[in-house]
Image (cartoon, rainbow, N blue to C red; front, side, top):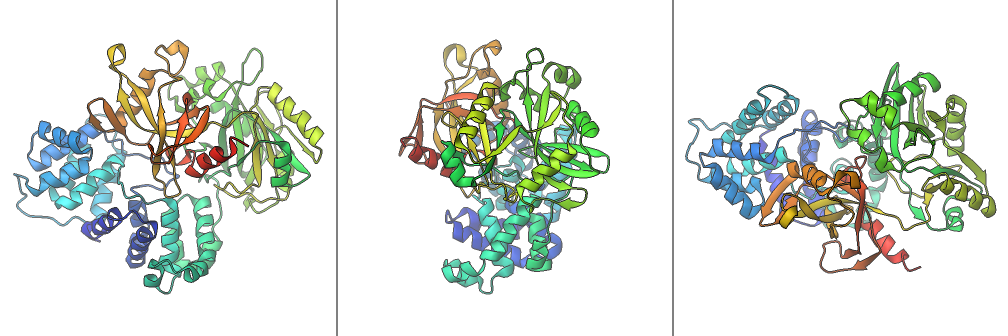
Length: 579
């Protein structure tokens, strides 16, 4: 497939902000794509080269792309950087400079999708000596062969900044339109009757994606095996799936209303989700953002190997830090550094120990468990997990219909240093990735928000070398990031005081997309937990809301940008804060 054919679809997607039009263009592309190219085309439309469960990254800095544009267009580095500073879009810079490039190749080669993907995936594998030079050569090779329009999107893809506004909902619906709609043109006009006919297909596509985390695989199944094939998709150990999420309630009575009575209640730990996979003898640990952290937690692997029965399984759990002297649970921020640690792992494990609290089983000895009632899944983990103090246990729980008994258990959870309770519906299935009310969280304080940093400002005076004011964003249903305010409070100058401006600056520096004076636009990569006094309506920010007196609590290394708090959550908190 010629790369220019895909690029022309990119242009159509870029030319509209309407979700239905985007869905139509994607659906037409998928429908016309041969089966052997469908998986990779589905990835490229998302600006990805690998499925969501695969954490492989290109690791290409903006400066290297500047150098590649310089080499392929014959322009000076300063000219490239000056144009970039004005527009904030290196893709646009590549396009403009290639229109008037001084050095034209003798034979213009036509780029194919296969060639582009091959080069980009090679870049992702390069490490060590001379790897930077080899990455530069591969990028420059593509740009030299590209048309100006192709160069724009190659550059954006390399930087992970495709800017097409294609969210999961649009891609899910596009797969349904492409393979289960009789009349694509009718759907374009938002014919509600015809869209209703697709509801079954949409539900099955969503379920298939939730358990595979791979729209490419889902699209291929839809094309080749139809609804029957989608309905047969199942989870399997070794491949992480989205965890089920919980909406918040403010009172025990509200919790009972949502999940039924009697209900099960468990401690809500202030740790991080850990999805435990065992296949044959191999144990793999994934965070909520699907990162493989097996090497960082050898102590957890050892506990699972020794104290969990079963040849193959997927467990849902929470890793919680504790003080090795007092045994008291510690907040997430105290152990978050273990997620990213690559060296001295054993030393850090002994200094910052964790206890694994297992609370669900999704797969066991060759069978998916997600369609079983929660009460049966709970009984299964109690039967197969052997508790070892401060190493591994089944999450502490009660089953009750008594408000008084639930209140006493709530107080016990808080006094033990936990955040509150999780209330669970006893006969509920497990819904990956959903906030369906099968479980709810009960906390005594206003819930914080997990927000993505999308911009910043360089400081002044003694803080001139740091980014000091950070623009925060939530995520909408299309996957777009909408601003909800700025924050500079809660961040320190000295490391012994907590999270510092210097640390945040170094996290964000590789992701800078544009600088204009003191203002900086950054790629949405870093997620921070933010507390605030109030949410207000505001025309200033694209979300329509603003946080009053926001303050950073911690960086959430276990959250991906797509795991950030949604616009719907912000709206919900806004309307509930005065109740």
